[in-house]
Figure 1 (tube, helix red, strand yellow):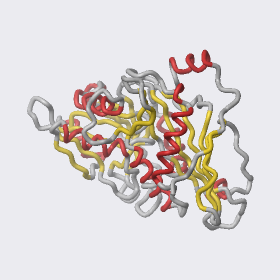
Figure 2: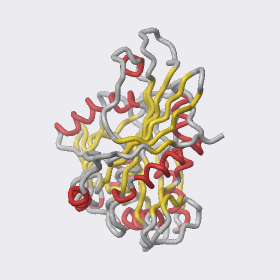
Figure 3: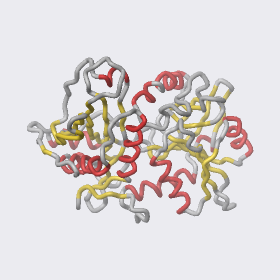
Figure 4: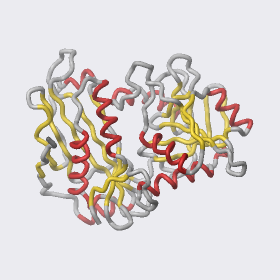
Length: 369
C-alpha cells in the first residue's frame, strides 16, 4: 500500500519578494525551498512516517553508520514549468528504479516507486511557487537522498534509514551557459572498477572524484574525464556526467551518436538513455561501444568524429571543446558548440519543457495548469 503523506507547513516561509528575486537568477544547489520530504525505515516497521515538513537541519547521532561506513545514495531529477502554467517532471519512474538499484548494491531497503514519485508530487505541489517560469533554462532541481541512521560502530547494514527529498531552484549548471567546456583526462586516479559501486549513485563515488576534479581545475579544465580501471585507456564518463561522441555530418547524412558502453563501473544515466532515443527519433544511428583516448584524439584529427558532448540531469547537454592530458591537448570543433549537440539538446529540452510533443510518455504531470 502506498504511503500517506502528512503535510506540515512552514510557518515562516520565504517572503514572496525574496523568493522572486532568487528565481530571477538561481544558482545550482545554493538555495532551497521552504519544505522537504522525510520518510523513515526500520526493520520492524518498514517505510513509515512519510511527511512534508519545513526545510531545516536534522538531528543525527554522530555514531550513525552512514557517517562511518558510507551507506548513502541519492538521485537528481527536475521539475519544469510548462507553457500552460502546469508543472511536470521527466521520467521519474526511471530515477525511482535507479535508486532502487543503488539501494540493492549498498544493501539498503528499496523505496517503492510509487512512494518515490508521490514524494516528488507532494513536495512540488507544496512548493510550486518555487518552480521558475517557463521558457528559460531554469527549473526546480530535486534531490532525493537516503542514508543509514543506526547509531552503531558495528560493520553491518544499518537497521534504520531516512529518505529525504530536497528542492532547489536552479539555472544553468555551468556558469558559462551553453558553451563548450574543457576536460582533463585523469590518468592518476580511477572512479570505479567493474564489480564495484560505479553503477550505483552513491555518495562515496563522488567523494572519490573530488581529488581528480581538483587536479583538473589546477590544469585549467572544467571537468575530469575518467578512464577504465583496468587498462586505463578507455573513456568511461566525466565527473558528474556521461559522455557522447558525434561521428559524420549532416551534409553527408551519415550521423552516428556513440557513447561508452555500460561496463558496470559507470553510471547508467537517464539523460544518456533519453538522448539515444531522441537521436534515433531524428534519424541518426546510435551505438554503445568502447572508445580509447587514442581513438578519440585520432578520430577528431581525421574529421571522422565531429563533436563531443556531456550529458546529465543537471547540465542536460553540454558541448566539450578542449581536451587536456599529461600528453598534450586537442580542440574539438574549433572549441564551438556543434550543430548536432545543439540539435540534440533542443530536442530533449523541448520535450522536458512541454514545448514539443512527448512521443514516449516521459513527462509526468505534477501540478495541473
